Length: 108
Image (spheres, one colour):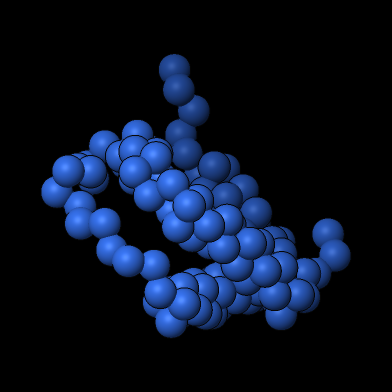
């Protein structure tokens, strides 16, 4: 398998998260009650009546957007790096599995 470029994977994941975050913020800004109802349906532990509907602010939007995109970039880059590392060391992993299975006694 060919290696993944971790920065490209991180960038793609960050952009995807940015789009999803923006769409979610738009839904909550336009239809706050329906948006909270959707969150309640997805996560049963969130109680909508106990959740205070906060006013939408541009500052809060960009803070959340930038934070989620940074975390997504780090996650994607880390995943790409670990994927490449496992891919490079695949022979070592499969050799250890083969040697472990060859030492087991046969069932009678």
